[in-house]
Length: 409
Image (cartoon, rainbow, N blue to C red):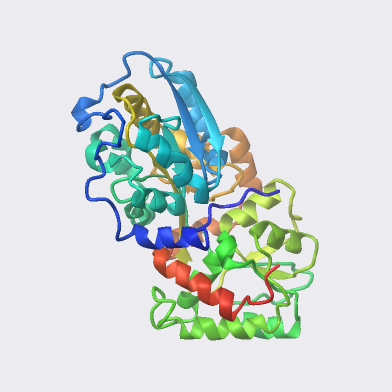
């Protein structure tokens, strides 16, 4: 199965995310019950641990696919900082339940968390994170080198999340040229094609799919809605478009993996797409090489990003090692590993992390499976961050009620 992007959870988790933007604790460095203080400001953390420490990393975003080589290199090169680094994976909706008891009791088993905005936001509400970018920014100087277009995504982390990887994401159109001889040039062009070819175009439920939610959030820009940041009052054209398109779609998959399969096996002839979900499945043989892509006019890309978060209560020695690791991962020579097989294309979050610095296997995959128009489009196209959590949850809810009701499978 193709690994999934981290997604905002529905139901109870959605309520947590909705509160994140306005419920950040006033005292993020407050002492957890029963725990030992991590240390004071940056001066209280040693330059390196008194002896090498063992670190355990929890990934709830599929991020290790991009960052594992960076971690491996740190472990190999920085033996004066770490004796070992272990990793485990989990789901973002389970993050608070797993980590909060550890923070509250001062019995940390997890030293670093890799997550998207979902786990980051729920952890802010639960008061789980160290304010790295407030209290220890001088220990992560490579955060000064972020890509210009990624700066708005950096702000999503507030004082807590350190941006590690970034993509402008999309949307655009993927199509089978044998079935779509005149691909759409605008979003509006999609409708007559879908009407003439019922059930041959589709996309996955936005609440469960990174591509689906990128499509949902990108349409207000392409269609010229009054306020692309307000799905309740500013998306009149978008909701009308999706309702009309829905007349020609019999069902919506509950994940991007099935949408990719539908394109691969010919069930669909056209679908919305993002850079990573076009490149990586072709590089790994999950979709055939004949599929093509096309940009749509008036596009604004909607980015995706993943972060490193440090739990409150780490010992000074462990915090020293974690801060060194995070800064190391943002060195251009290391961050270039985020090119991977195009999974989060481009992937790097910092300047000068050029493809020639990536592992050879990544260079080969990108050279073969990147499209000739992608890099120019990334450079020239405006990029916006996703909707705030509370607005995105409302958009998901309205889509579920008015577009996908009875059709989600």
